[in-house]
Image (tube, rainbow, N blue to C red; front, side, top):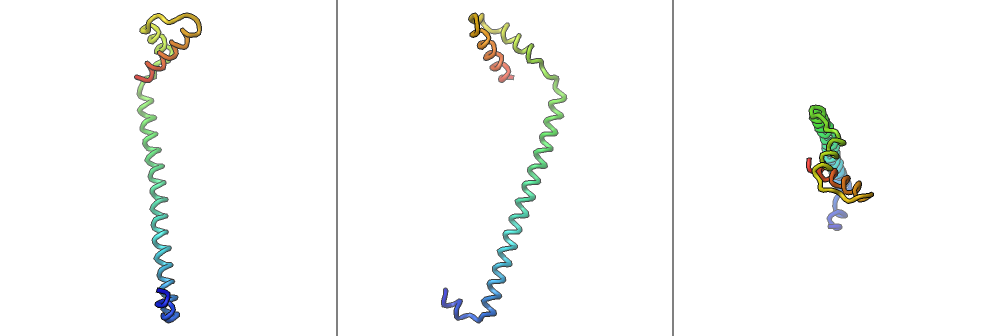
Length: 100
């Protein structure tokens, strides 16, 4: 391979190296532009989806968290006394909220 390069005329070698560099820049530029477009498209889609989700959230009436905790406490079995009762009520409320 090296003998082929040394036997080539200088102007042909320079032309081939120049063509290779042009192809390198064109290829890398194309990939870079595609990735930039992909980033902006995904950000735009994210904003559109977040906007749609926000509209969907506004239409739903928000349930009061206090009412949910009271309902869970009424459904639950009698809890132990003291700090354990508060912990058990909080766990039951969180569990019930995660199911809804």
